[in-house]
Figure (cartoon, rainbow, N blue to C red):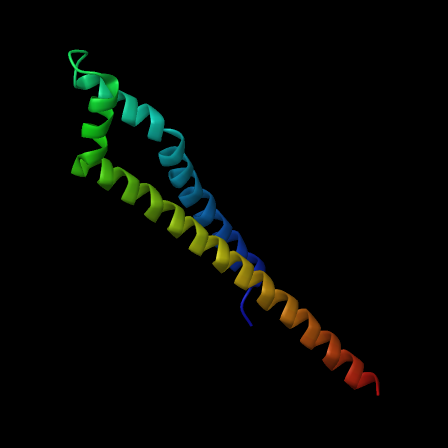
Length: 103
């Protein structure tokens, strides 16, 4: 019989770490974007510089990294819920066994 509370603790720790990575990428998205726009200088209108940054493969890579980090965090959250479900199933099964033994 596996120790589900330890499995849950480890899964939760993984989720917290991955969630913080995803959140950091999401929270710094505007900052990252603004830095790239400013690097292009003030000689052109802001909307042109913004379009250039968004068209650059580096922007696509940033967005993809951000989305994949959130995906990994979500998968770890699902793993935590799966462990919680296994715990509930085990409790129910043990309660049924105890009830059957009383009969």
